[in-house]
Length: 58
Figure 1 (tube, rainbow, N blue to C red):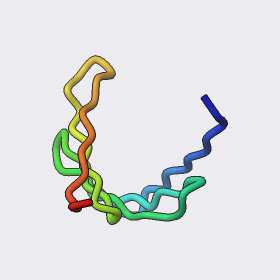
Figure 2 (figure 1 turned 45 degrees about the vertical axis):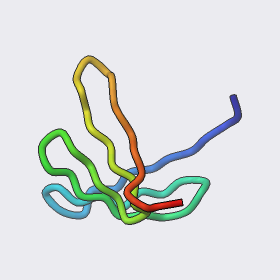
Figure 3 (figure 1 turned 60 degrees about the vertical axis):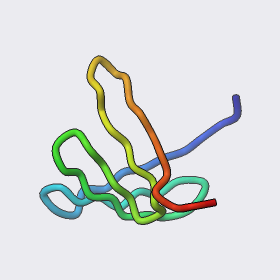
């Protein structure tokens, strides 16, 4: 596993700017679901377990 970096800055009630090694994105959190500007969706299932998927077709 390599070194990674991520910084999350809150800019609104449920809106964040994410800065990482792969670039900058904006995310919106609605309940347990987070959608970011790169087309990724994350669902928090509880107890530290998450499910990630991509909305974009490869």
